[in-house]
Image 1 (cartoon, rainbow, N blue to C red):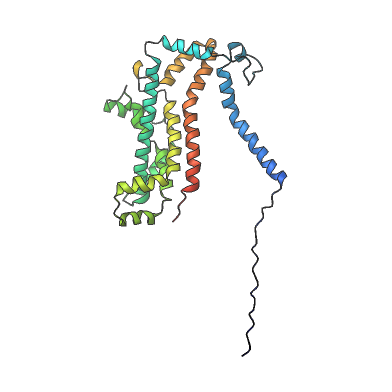
Image 2 (cartoon, rainbow, N blue to C red; image 1 turned 30 degrees about the vertical axis):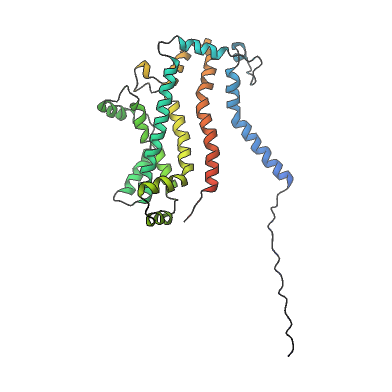
Length: 295
């Protein structure tokens, strides 16, 4: 019996795709990104330096970006002015913090629940309701201020925290954003959870909300920014219920002599929104990269 010769199969060479990018090209891209980063950071850097400038540096022309003789006089003058008010500074801060926290949490909960129903359940009029939400995005808040005031007056909520908090629960941007994200959640995943005996609330809280975490973190950034800077002077009249932005704006009514105090006010009002943005931004990028599940 003749032995059969084994035929060696030719080995297939793995083709590696090489990126045609030179070191000079990478340097050019990084240089452009650095330029835009510095351009966007310039207002923040200028505001921080202006808050610590004495008055003679604030009125210099041409203005200087960097402070030459840093001082805390602007902040000291601000606290002196606020201490002369019959309502303590801490009361204004509590009013703003309460409105911001409760309004943000309520807005995320209401928007998420409504978006879950619109995205995963079909009922008569659901499409028309979502079109109504999209139409509401076209209107500025000033357009609906009079109807909003009339409704709040009938409910007896004028001159209360709820006059600012409750209307923000139904902001159309949150519902639109959450629905668009929840439509990307696989229906197969929800059906598997129902087969395992999970209730609707369990599916919503333990499956859907973690997947759409980038959406409600982004929504939190917008809500904190809008509510923290809300003066609420239209619907809140009592001085002990007024917000911090309103009180600080009254301090600035003194004119040019309070330009340094105004710089300190601008920095104080930026601290909270910027801090929330920095913390949430890292989480948004992380969850967008790790929780992208497709059907």
